Amino acid sequence: MLVKKISGSNKAVGFISGAQGLTQVVLAVPVGLYGDRFLRQTLVRVGVVVGLIAMTISCYVFVKLEPNSSLLLFYVGFGVWGAYVVLTNPALESLFADSVPTGDRATIFSLKYATIQIASATGPLISVLMFYQLGDTWKLDVLRTVLLVGSAIGVGAMIFLVCLQDSAGLGKESEVMALEDDDGNALALALQEQEEQEKQEEQRIDLHRREQQTPNVCCKKSLCGADHLRTTRWIIALCDVATSTAAGMTVKFFPLFFVSEGTGSLLGYKFTPIELSWVYLIMPVCTVTVAVALPRIIKRRWVGRPLAMIICKTFGIGALYTMVFFDKQCSSPIAMVSLFIFRTAIMNGSAGIKRSILMDAVPKAHRVRWNSLESITRMTWSGSAALGGWCIDAFGFRQTFLITAIVYTFSTTPLLLLIPIVD
Image 1 (cartoon, rainbow, N blue to C red):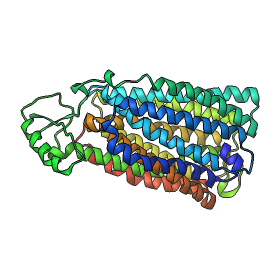
Image 2: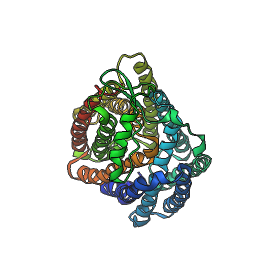
Image 3: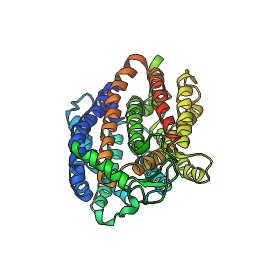
Image 4: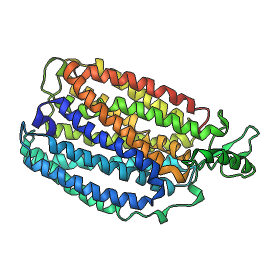
């Protein structure tokens, strides 16, 4: 909202997100290739330093910017934030995966995601209280104050990251998942992929030597033989890139849709700051409900992890299609908000399940590398935000939402291939 207030353009919102994404994709390659050679805690601590620099730039921007002023420092600040994400996120995800036994990740990762959602609800709650005190208005001075308070809280959160250590992780208990062969015997898959091409054949030989080992089995019979884990990894990675490309076109613009005072294709619901904050306060609570319920449903063997994830995404995509064609006169804000909250909660609530499937299929030695792919995914998310801003200015909110829904549909379909090979 601050960027929209300063620039008056949806495109500016998207381009600033694109600056963050560009930094992420530039740094994702070296971090992905060489990140596993360093301690995870080292990457996190370097990231904290970068994050504090980004926070300093952001706070300066919040204080100094005025309407119609240059957004150059905003671009710089978001670029540095991109570097912070690339350095910390892969290492944090890897540390967490190293600390959870293989086979138990669905529940733990869903609880982790639920905790993040609960924490994210505190921001809108603080915003509600501050807007009540400062005034329920989108004035620049009010937005500055709210953002500066949020930044101060963020500094405290960063400091806690320095306490994380590699030595707290598990050993073989958190290694790559096991797989059953055609005779029902368990095979230990420790696919320690190396950068050097010549070592791949040696790994395949080593894999066959381990056929008599019997670790805990947590997968169905593979349709892809010894390449089952590689297949799982790449399906999830490619679907993530496509999904993030679609999401980036709309996610940052949902708030602008609800507060828009435009006409025609830019018609919105004219929400006040407090009304919008309540939406983003309720939404994480609903997402937590889904995230906590899914592992329990899966444990009762009603559905497997891939099918549960696909069902959630299908309902979420259906809700987004409904948002495109429902209430075009913007006369039913409660109904539209309900659709939006349902869409977000049901789609995002399965994130922990997806992460558990991926980490079960990635060897410990290469988790930073695979989690670095998340930076490329975030880049597509941020980069497509620039496209989304242009589309909204050119075609309107609902037409852009429709494009996103169509891409979601195609990006979710390949996940069906996981149903026969993953519990």
